[in-house]
Image 1: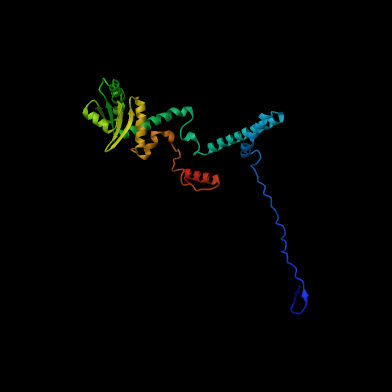
Image 2: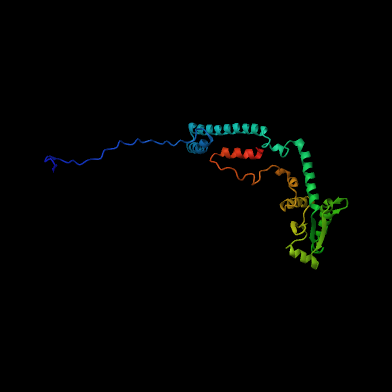
Length: 272
C-alpha cells in the first residue's frame, strides 16, 4: 500500500506491456521455369530419362519420349525461324561473304587467286627472298628446291621470278654464309627468309616446301608483319571477310538483359 498526499491509499499493479498483434507471414513461393520451356527441359528431361531407365513402364517411357518430342519440335521451329531471319538479313547470310552455290565457286576461286597474286606482287616490290643452302654433298635437295620452287625450271617460273622478288642464294658452307645463318639462328637447309629492308627478317620455311605452300607462307608473313595496305589484307584470306574482330566485340554496354547487348551489337555491325 502506498499513501497518497490526501491520506488515501491505493494499490500499485505491475504494468504489463501491451501485446502487439502478430505480424502477417507472407509465404514466398519460388517459381521455377515455365513447363515445357527449354529451361524446364534441361532440368527435367534427364530426370525423366532416369525414371524411365530405372523403371521402364509404359507411363515412364512415354513421358520421356514425349519430352524428346517437345525438344525436337522446338528445335525445328527454331531452325525454320533461323532460315527466315538469315534470308532477310544480308549481314547474316554467309553466301554474301563466300559463295555457297556450286556455279559461283569457280569465279570466286579465280578472284581469290588473282587477289593473292596482287598481294605477292606488291610484297615483291618491297621485299626480297633469301634461301640458305648447303654444299651438295650435305644437302642434295637444296639445288633442286632453288631451281624448281624459287627460280623456276624451263617454262615454269619459280616464286621469286614469277612475282619479281629480289632473290639471293646464300651458301652456308662458306664463312660468310655461316655467319649470316648464325645471325638469324638458322639450323636447317634449305631455309627461305623473307627480307623487308631495313631490318625485317621473317622465316617462312625451314626445309623443303612446294611452291604453293611457300606462297601461302609468304601471304601469312606479309599480313602478320603488317607490310600490306589495309585494302589488300582481305585478299590474303577472303574467307575472313567481315568476320568480327576482337575490337568489334569490345566496349558494348553491360546489361543483365542479353537482348540489350545483342541489339547494340547488331546496330554496330550495321553502322546504325
